Image 1: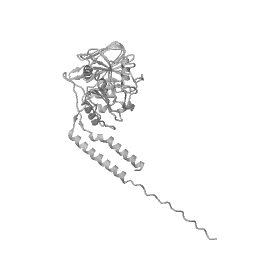
Image 2: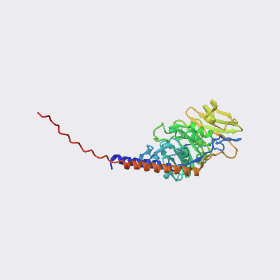
Image 3: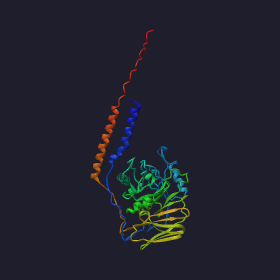
Length: 394
């Protein structure tokens, strides 16, 4: 087989393997975006202990023979975070769980799911097993929802990682995606508060994470720069997961994993949200639907905002001398349970779409194979003997 034809066949096989997952592409019925509503205000920090644990759930050690992930082994990553004072140091290698720490009561088995070119990745927390399925190229909102549902089958909580990185999850996506609890608002690569507001404005109660996503713990520019404060009574796995599920987290951006001003209280009394800090801060800003600034106070230890009937949610951003803190929102609800929109799998539409893609895949593969087979080596052209030159008679 000629080199060109061999390369063409190899390319055809690779294209087939990459496109095969799309034969499983689903169709969902998504609930229409609807702002939070109700007479009561849900405060995620109510009932907290005030014991703030320093956590990072997303970082990488060396894995896959050094092909990807971090520059150091997992043990070195954990040691570095311990040295920085983290109570919950997490390693989340791609499709890998560090089972050696399973005996540790504080260990939360976590991995990062996804190898798509556009960085549509998810964090599987308290994962019982690894889901390997992914759509490696472009992904529709239906395909992203399918991946979230798959990951959630074997994980207690799912976070959407760095949604604004390479536009992995657009604001439009986040108005519809469901069945995840956490969103990585802060990541050393990018900040995704715009995407967070898109989800919140559409009635999705998802809570903020701040994670380094460090791939080299010796680099101070990507280690100890984004972290999550978790209000939990202990570092035991169940206690931490309960706090994450309830929204008792604060995502923080800074340096050296040092939160220079503590948040003392986030309280709701009637229609008034009051935030109190342990020292004077540069500013406290209250933000509402679609990222609209509702009020800002500077040079204070605390601030209050009267939640208006038109406010579906109010979240708070605190700027201190050395950090920026993103608090989870107070949201409207019926007083019993937060609204939880859930996308519904459409079986009939999915069967039709999968059949159409299967037929298209088979037809395309057969056509490409036929074109390759029909390519024949051109027959060699026999050299033409030169004609003798006739000389004129003398």
